[in-house]
Amino acid sequence: MKKMISILLVLMLALGMAGSVLAEDAAAQTPKYVFMFIGDGMGSPQITATQYYVGALENEDSTLPVSADLSFTTFKNIGIMTTYDATSFCPDSASTATSMASGEKTLSGVINYNIDKTESFKLITEYAKEAGKKVGVISSVSINHATPAAYYAKVESRNEYYDIAVQGLTGNTIDFIGGGNWNKPTGDGTQKDLYEIAAENGFNVVNTNEGIRTLTADAGKTLAVVPDHQDSYSMQFEIDRQRKVAEGADSMALSEIVSAAITNLDNENGFFLMAEGGKIDWSCHANDAMTSIYDTIALSDAVQVAIDFAAEHPDDTLIIVTADHETGGLTIGFAATAYDTHFEYLQNQSMSYVDFDSEIGKMRDEGTGYESALETIEKYYGLTTKEGSDITMTSDEVTRIQEAYNLSMIPKSARALDANAMLTYGGYEPLSMAVSHVLNNKAGIAFTSYAHTGLLIPVYATGVGAEQFAGSYDNTNVFDKTMAAMGLTE
Ligand SMILES: [Zn+2]
Image (cartoon, rainbow, N blue to C red; front, side, top):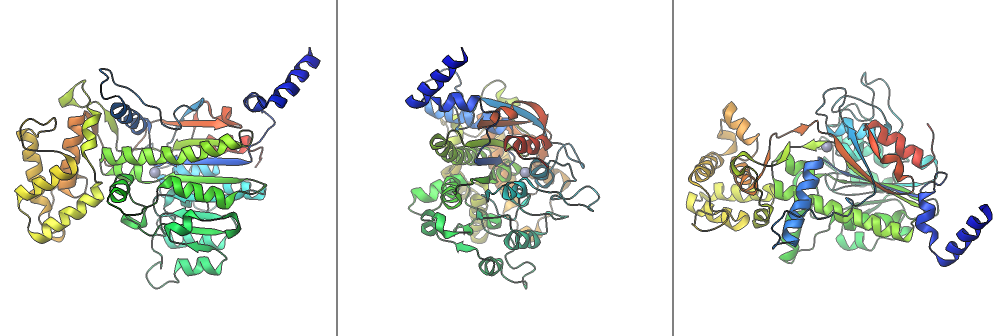
């Protein structure tokens, strides 16, 4: 019997059929290439909303809701994890990324230090480096923001942006870092420029789209930042990037940074690459559902690049896709629409709250009247006062928009928002929030918070060692499972 099986195996190998069979029987096998994707704030509601949105667009005539697949939602190994930290069961990005990068719990705001801030932790990237792999870190937000920082730095506070960057640039962990730019590139304004420090430490500094797209493995240690950064040195929101590209601009997608990193990092010992879709979180803080859906699609596209790579290296690749926590308390279902949802209404929106804030700034500077403001809202969100549209505003909604418009036209320094207004608008530009809330609610979705929540978070995995990630566990176990999959011990 044994002999027959080995003959069969030899036959299958000869036929090139053994890849998937062997991968399933790969207990002793470890992945040469490890991809860790983190959608910041991408809980189950964000993924579900994106699946139904894409499904609604692809199946206009369907009488039933259709949930479309994203690149990673078809992965066979699915887990669910707790994300609480030492401060709260609504944790932050610093403590949760620490848990996944080092296997330890800590306080909100702390990166890779223990609760007493007396001891630092050893990172998965450091173990990977010791095992001979190259290490890449990518984020669509600034690359010294909490999540990417947790994969190369150890600081008592996530706000130590400059120190985080210096640790990354002067340490031995990073071979590729890219996406958004450095936040606080000259620290307090007088410190040495981080791009200068990068060059001094042997980094090939690339800051053009063409330069990033044509990166090679020969380029060596690389810092690759997009030239057209948006708020807080981040990459563009995907919804804005697509609009700007349609208008003729060139702007890079997260997937292109992942491609560039793979080309740059590929070597005979393999690599560990963490890539973060960081603005899913930012848009959900701002209750901007359509923008978070676009950024979830951008992350799905980035994962697709890894899936395509894995297809060429099926016995050598592990892909993990998860989030650090949910943001915004997003729900599918809203009181006023009861059991109805209309995801297709969201496609009327073509601008993120950040770019719309800029439009509001122009209105304020130019003294734009309410009627013209309504025209701008209709242009970028589809919401109208004209009768007969699917998203014609009710009189209550018009009142909400007008109240927010009145507040937004007061210069920021002169605004005195009472506690109620702070709760209504979460400290954001009132008109942006009102417009998002009205459109979200018409679509049958809503947010309950401007902050993080304590929901369980799904984990999707495929490839060598992926079976480790099925089941129910804690976020610290993501570290343990990744170590085990890689055959590494502490
Ligand atoms: Zn986060």
